[in-house]
Amino acid sequence: MSKIVALTYLTLDGVMENPVWTGPYFNADHAAYAHGQLFAADALLLGRTTYEGMAAAWPRMEESEGEFAVRMNTLPKYVPSTTLRPEQATWNATVVSGDLGTEVAALKERHAGTVLVYGSAELTHSLMELGLLDELKLWIHPVVVGQGKRLFPEGAGAATWTLAATTAFGSGTVVLDYRRGEQN
Image (cartoon, rainbow, N blue to C red; front, side, top):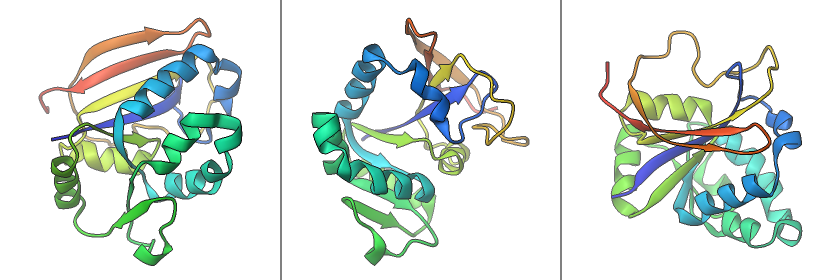
């Protein structure tokens, strides 16, 4: 059975939207960490908006990004959506249109290792509410942007997570790795 791991870039004030603010902090250490995460994954689970943005960008990046882009492009992708039709899926993706809980539970059974969720705030919230998200890897960047979509919006359900690991980079970015604990 696989585990579902959400990997999300955040600012100090919890904003995840439009992460152009990550650029100044991304370096070789970040790239090596991201490489390890992607190459340990068996599949990607992406919200529709994240999927559409990544599907538009990554297929053109193999020459500049090498094996990382090849891996990104060849991994199977699952996209829960009520608006994207199966025949519209590209980039090695399958549209998941049934009950999210049932479909993701089956996905966890189908894969043996890690299924990564990149960004995808609404999907991450839904997985947390359904008790299907096993791990949060929060990349906290040393910047405050003041406004934008936050990972944990007002009214999000309470949950307990256990800190499993911390990775600090010289750039000031820290990855906090949390595992699902008992629900409150």
